[in-house]
Image (tube, rainbow, N blue to C red; front, top):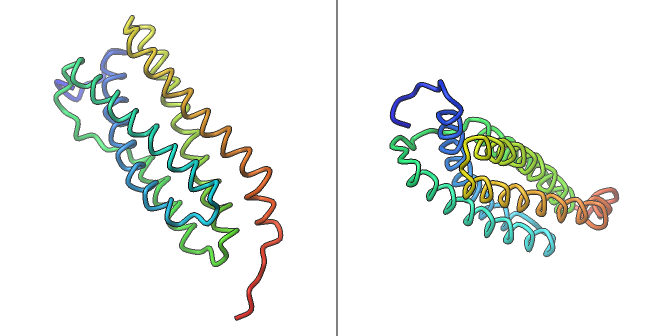
Length: 172
């Protein structure tokens, strides 16, 4: 943004999207680590797909920032940082691989739901401002997030949470 004032919807979407860029970069770095933390092959596969989506989102947001001539992109989203820190903290307490997968999946869905909301709002603002190209791009990102959410929900219901319900305890 040319200055830090948010006094129009255009300023608001610009600020929101620069926050989102920071969020996506932080998330990508964490997802790469969390793939290694996951025990389930299916969970690892979904997380890898999610990383691909996040890469697409980062590129699209970068294009938006260039097209909008937003000069200040040093904005950091504290909400995403909190989600990531909470996930890392929860995972540090998990001593069983099945429980860790359930925990990781639940935490990623929390992040995912947050991003669905942000991309939905960005889509609405872009439509309002007649930024059709970006309204479409943000809507596609929202659809990507919903796709990951659906895959995670199915995996939780049919594998991860079932295994976590009765984890196998290994003798010490």
